[in-house]
Image 1 (cartoon, one colour):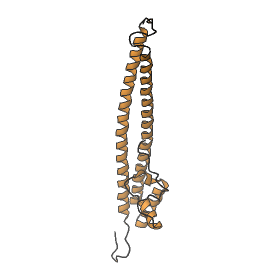
Image 2 (tube, helix red, strand yellow):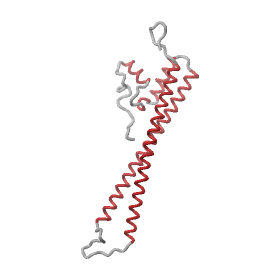
Image 3 (cartoon, one colour):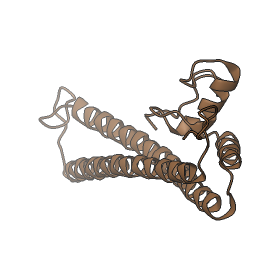
Image 4 (tube, helix red, strand yellow):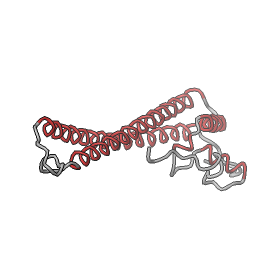
Length: 190
């Protein structure tokens, strides 16, 4: 990346095209990981729903039978609190299912955002390859692209070109921590 004089590094369009492909590939890998996590949550939801159905069926078969109240007020051998306890457990399972459904929806939203950015990087790489001949112009297009799409928040362990350019122009550390306005990384729990 340097010219023959050794004064300034030359920028290659091909390097930025490859960078865009790499970024798109990393994003696609994140999408695949999130998809696996969402599938695991969906499996958990299915198991919880089966447990809820089973408990409700057990409740309804117990309710349909005739129980004779005992003189002490107990209803059958299990006592009056057995039904309340079962209902509380069923409600807890339902709450757990709702929370997991929310997490799945959040993951699906994140997956869509990551997929869109991956597609945008792929498109940018193709545009650079076909329309740009100057490495400096390619650099500027990548910087504007990443700034417009807030790309640094998608890459936890990797510095973007935008972050590197902003850090070098401002004299700040190249880790990007202050370049994008603080820690705006996506929540990993969603």
